[in-house]
Length: 119
Image 1 (tube, rainbow, N blue to C red):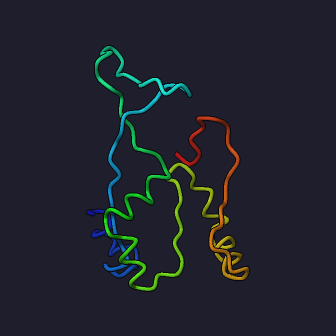
Image 2: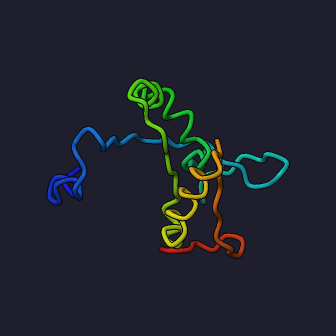
């Protein structure tokens, strides 16, 4: 919040900014769903953010989706914090979605497994 306040929401009105927090959940180590434990403590489960797809559930439970629907929000853009390269293509993707009346569109950037792009 301090960053937004110090920079006057980067030009957005206060009603245009909504911060919601995604909680952590226990994570798995493999495709057999073996629960990950903390290093040095086999009785403590390792937790991580639930994943990028969890944002939709958080939007629902926080009332964000209902609020945006009531306000007539037409476009929503999700991006991953590890993928800053998407900003080079996002305006073209939104324009393409509008021109072709897409309900959903997706953009990806090639990367290797576990490679954090943009950090």
